[in-house]
Image (cartoon, rainbow, N blue to C red):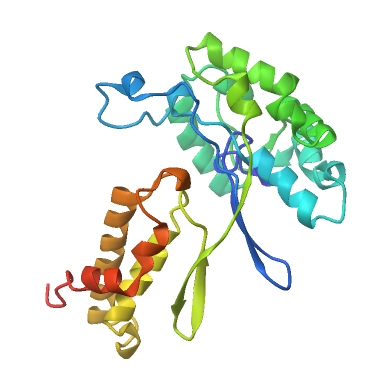
Length: 283
């Protein structure tokens, strides 16, 4: 939770969350990514060749908060109010901005400064914070406090949700209270693929980790272990395998409930063999 304060460039309260957790006995997969607003349809985006990258038309239901709550309920030994305290204190009292985050903050500012509310929240002095400067966000501290005290209810069903929906509506967004009310984080079965005397585990779609498993499966068909690591043939096969995996990702991967076929079929030896045959080792 502290990262949502210390690294707002990549871990915002409005983000999604995926997690693979080892509890000492087994791995557990959590998909807390948010779904699209229910009223979104093809007509809403007609005429656009790509989805928007900024603005409310790029916003789905934020899932990270549900991940904090769900993970704490299952694995934590301390109450959420205690777990959230460092994040709340950093937001309330301030923290020195690191050089990397300052760089990313400036880049984000250049892209998002025209968005309603952004400057007031993340550039109150009219510019992004510089490396080494102390940045405070008391409003974020209050929000995190309320999230912790209500175990996320305020964020998805209470006054925080109402404020989000009202602000979204002011700017023509489709996000509704029903969208927030219906959000859930899902425990999911992991996908796995044997590799190099072990196995690699990934979350299933809509996560993109299956691309890693596809690429590794293709490399197995080429007996990649017989090649010298980092040699030209080894690198060539690895690059081509990843390219094929990304093609499959773009073509087939969507929300798990809407896949055209079970994701496991993309990891079958017969399919991976077909994909591996598309690689020319000499070009």
